[in-house]
Length: 140
Image 1: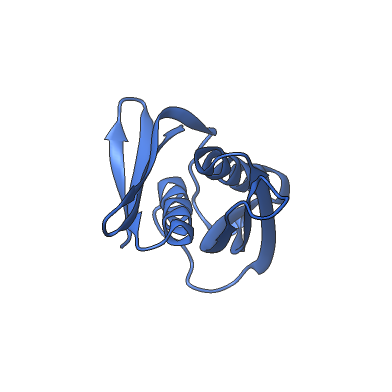
Image 2 (image 1 turned 90 degrees about the vertical axis):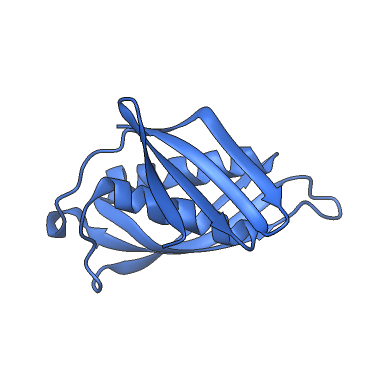
């Protein structure tokens, strides 16, 4: 598994590593899904597109995870099986851009716990010799 759930006082944290920035974003999102439910159905649910822009990579990660929590609340689905593509600022565009997809498993098909919000508390996103590392705390 490319992520690990970490105990964090009354919250839950997800730590992930991946060779690419896109990969670590997807791994943290998969960790969010795992923090939300013990068993994720292997099939079912529709593919949903998501897009987010932000000024910095950390803000992009926060906004992406916040969007996934919003999608869960509005669509009544658990976002799983995340695929992410990140574009760095270039030319006259000064924002980082994320385009991705997830499979939306209807909440009635899972025994989901509520993850209330993503936090900036202790968030880190680092480029390493092996790729990227991230740590995110969620309010439960």
